[in-house]
Length: 467
Figure (cartoon, one colour):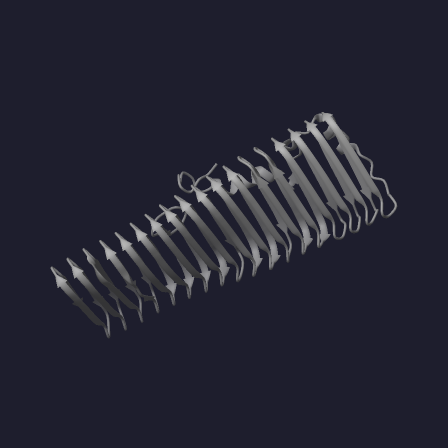
């Protein structure tokens, strides 16, 4: 399992989810992962599809060990299949084909049980799965449907569940797991769909995939210790990814590719949390990361046009690296008209961000002890702002292009350092520092430059070079 806090691989995050839910080139459910006996798998494959009357109802109740319950309903609108199993190594399967308003209700309690619900080609299908115990497995598959709903609830430890929805417009997927070492995965392909995934406990994993959609929402909420959450959204328009983690040693990853006007939000509360947001080949993307606690770490990369980045860190030892694939200060924001707003309150906070393109803007605020900001902007219309308040703060800004403006003000603290380097036309730089032992350097090269340095206290050093 990939962990941001350990940072040992840049490719393991996406693989962790696909191993949970899918296998094969056709993204079919992997029936071998359901812990189904060969007999049950053979029966499920050889089931003959029968046309049933509307309003058909099937009820199955089984108790004991090694029971198999299978239901197939085809061309039977407003049909309901209900299965209840108590015991160990039981299997329940429901298949509903070309039904309208069909319902699948499956309940299992015990250990090493498996449940599967398949609904295809029906309008407004509903699948509900509930499992209580240990080492249980739940799978729901809905395809070619409209306004379908799939829910899975698991209580216990080491349980697996996944919901697969393809070509299902305006569909909803809900997963709730309570316990430790549980895994959950969801897949949606189409528009106006929602995913809600909740996990409470320790060492839980959550994975979400959404493709080819408009106005989709993916919500993951985890509470506990050492949890992992990842959202992958591709070819989305006006979609939202939201991850909320409460606890310690949690990791959150959001990947948004080839989209427009999408939003990625990560909330983390606790200690030593890690957040990664990657937005590529997109327009008008927004990324918001809020971390409260200690020793939090964020990696952000945005590539495209009109992106916005907002980072808020409160705690101790927070770090932000807006770069590529765990590399520091080698990217951050690529493209045109990018903006970044950064706020850190605490001790030993660090910000390292690089912007490449036109019309880039950077805003930063650091309050605490030992804060460090490194910002690099290149080519055209860039704006850098500031404030640093505390002890041992250091600010380093480099701008290259035209119409650049850099303003840094550190007021009151010790050992503050501000350095600004600007190149070429219409540049403006100003640093104001208050305290003792402050140093300010301004280097400008080009036309129409203006440099202002104001320092009060003792032991301040100011240097300004203009060419």
